[in-house]
Length: 318
Image (cartoon, rainbow, N blue to C red; front, top):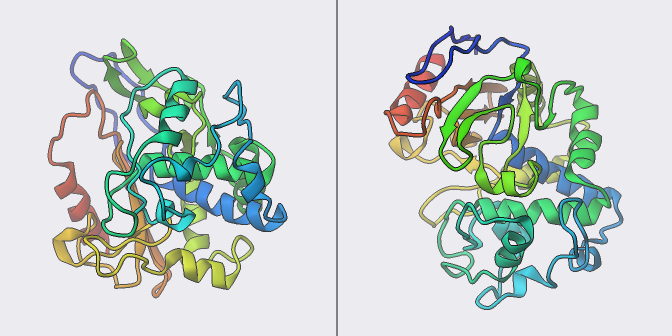
């Protein structure tokens, strides 16, 4: 698809912003968890699969003490497994805006499931939080280093990384009552803020050129990143027969209006959307992709019909 660069705009009650250029970094909700899930797969392969022991006693860089043991064995969690977290159909759900980090992770580790694993697709940021911690345990390093080692460096993603990002490379997002200011250059998600800006579900910034580079790789089967069998398993539907179609860490192509990008893509297409107004969608059968980066939450997260705009963007572009 061709590029459509947004012009400058002044939001009500917010100081003038210089706008977003092609070299500027945008929060990329859909790409972050997907990059981290690919990182987890490669870390497990290169780290001699030590996840089982390490996940129970790893100490991520933002926590003062090890995680509670066996987070998937909290009351009501029997049967929840890593693929459930990535699909996501594990049933994990925890309230946002819990702080500081220690209580948040303690609560996440002990949270009962809202539905039995494998019975219903419910998007879960908390599932990706757990996957991020598993990646750190398997790789023996923080997510920042692992994402760069296994994804950023092989693909040459020079502008991609976790925040905070200098103001000159970003734009203002939400006028956040919780933080008492307009957010700029830092992760939008509140739980990720509590975790220091680096988490398995949010926190990654990337300019358009880097997102396109990632999209081209994925559209071609991710050579050099994933083995063919791993790529096939990651992109195959794992929830057919349930309420929504999901691959591992990706949304599948739901029929018609059930898809956030409409019905223009083939049945094997996959992608993901982001709360801040972003999306990445890939059709491996044709080798095509679509990247949409907007600032939907500026100056507030109030819903203004963005879903219809997203579907129209993909209809016109495809």
